[in-house]
Length: 325
Image 1 (cartoon, rainbow, N blue to C red):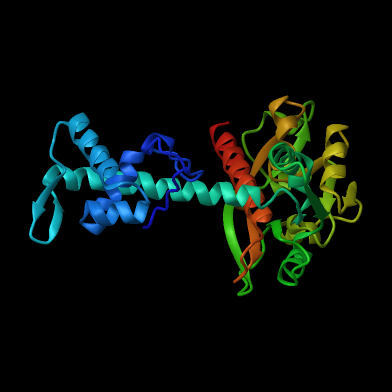
Image 2: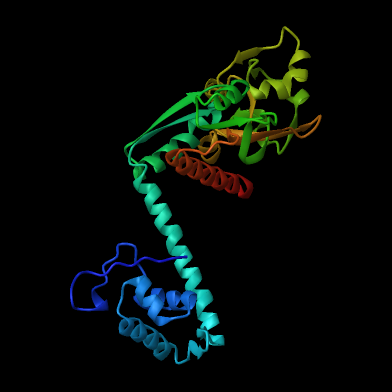
């Protein structure tokens, strides 16, 4: 790795080194150049610093560490054992500095731009607003567009490039989609605080049939999980059908019946005990897979890349919180 350092055009020497790309001690740059080139003179030429100045920096390092870092050989300067140990440290420090420069350059490059996101409704209620708020505090000039759609329509938008990032439940594996993050969430019966099921640790679909039901329409991933169950419900049963997760939530809050979903979208209601989520375990445990998706073989724009990192971080934290609950 070549480190380029600029000297100010003064006669004051090395103390007036002015490179904007130098955040560490001058000595570490001098050491690394001597290590790579095997010569103080060559390091001096590369760094545009006087030979005597490079020598003083090496000598200062050796004095500070109280060891000899280089020994002379017919082929130039060679690292001692102590020098090899320090070289590993220096390389780590300088590589980390390069990573930092790249990240800073990336941040500078996203002062303006636009991101398009597609999400199913559940995450749009609480999670997506949190992510957008966090993102906008850092990148206020980036505009964000959000499509709230069903999972079935998500792949087409991502693959066609209409959106940069997709967040959806139960998308089947596709060659043109890249899954960046995934988590399985248990489907449960969701009821208000006064409902008889509130005191259950688990329930079955048939047990839920003792009460009015709030069901998802076709097009939502929840309907796929419950389709066999829904087909057996008697036509005389009290049923409300909707394609809105938020409406299902509000109907459940008002005591209108039992709805079915994961904890995504009702986190605050659960925390405040306004709603209760009872896992469905009969006829079997039912899981719904929430994933973050982008188009395969596509490099995300810098702004979208930063957003998806924030999104995955928030999702991971939410998953940890749900596990510990």
